[in-house]
Image (cartoon, protein in one colour):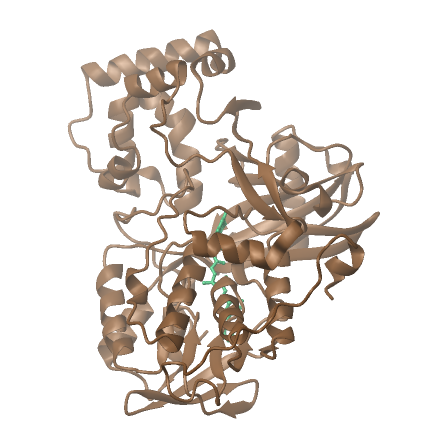
Length: 518
Ligand SMILES: Cc1cc2nc3c(=O)[nH]c(=O)nc-3n(C[C@H](O)[C@H](O)[C@H](O)COP(=O)(O)OP(=O)(O)OC[C@H]3O[C@@H](n4cnc5c(N)ncnc54)[C@H](O)[C@@H]3O)c2cc1C
């Protein structure tokens, strides 16, 4: 029984039952464990579904905690245990199979939560999506006049060229509105000035939106045109990590193994098969392998190395990284929203999460507030390398600058770095993936799944669906193309699944200089 279940007598703790599969399509599946790399949402899904059918599995996890990017950090503090979600994970999917699995794992622990998020600008909260009367009230007469004049100026004298995000948006909305609502958040997310982001990328994201259509929507509503907004989502009582911890426990109850702190280091391959997998000082001889390793790493761990073309492709893959500074503060919540977007250019923080609004059970003391300040960065840059204590101080300074909290409210805080948080789409990434995929297609007992496993900007439902399809391929003998799996989970209004890449010149990142297997 998990800690959570022990603390909550209402939770149904009956272990899951094995429903054995007769004659799995892949020979040897019942005799030799399928080896699964990574105990994030994708790897655990594969492990759970195989174990539930009575098939042996071993899941290898490099860290001492499950959940990958979607884990929950836990710290002791005043009044009990505080829980912190790295990024705020909404559970929402259009795929029934995934939804059913979430409910099967979480049972009564899967809460339905309301969503509230606003833009924080000039020390004011603006409703999101923007509402006309609210914008007018918050902008005030002076700023409103400047924005309107700037809009008309852009119509009379538009910039001739529209090569950049900045030019494209300024021509349509005016320079003033661009500066107020488009520049700072975009620059924080992508790490370059908006003059270095392509106009096509703006056109794709802000497609069909003009000053007048935005104003119309703000005053008269959207009439269902913004399909990506969701007002409610599911969330485990103790944060997303509870889902992955419960899945781990279920796998073990079903007879499978999840080996923590056991990084996979090498994959020996001959004649188009993985013959040996090295992990935690042991060597395993796999029948089948399901891997959620980032593509860069799987190339780096292959022995012998694939062709120089494939190695070069892997070296070129880039990631945008991310760090969260989690703080427990004395006093009431700083705002009622689940999270707020920070459209202030003078601070580095991009978004602030308010964990009590995600789930009240994450914050044990009603007189403490619990927030996560999100900073987008590149692994190895100045922010990433900043000492943890200094990051906590930075976060407190920024909260004070934003007039949301005072330094003396700090109870405790810590920083969590999330490498490879966002696989980056750059000019050549599709060609690179094609080269790596060509090589992987020739390895018959290895299937790549998950977010970085496919270098796709996936939510957890999509990551899990790829694992489900990989399991079907092994057990049912289907021939699903994992790369073609589409969960259509484009509900992140601020993080649509871009087909285009944003950069004019893609930044070279420090992480690229590291050996490929790291
Ligand atoms: C800021 C942010 C917000 C997000 N919000 C949402 C949201 O609201 N809703 C949603 O559904 N999704 C959201 N996501 C996406 C979600 O986090 C991912 O889709 C999901 O975590 C991907 O699962 P995965 O198993 O593919 O990969 P990961 O979560 O990256 O897990 C991979 C696992 O493999 C392990 N591993 C790596 N190398 C090795 C090795 N050599 N040996 C063994 N193990 C190894 C890692 O330690 C990790 O545990 C968000 C992501 C981010 C960054």
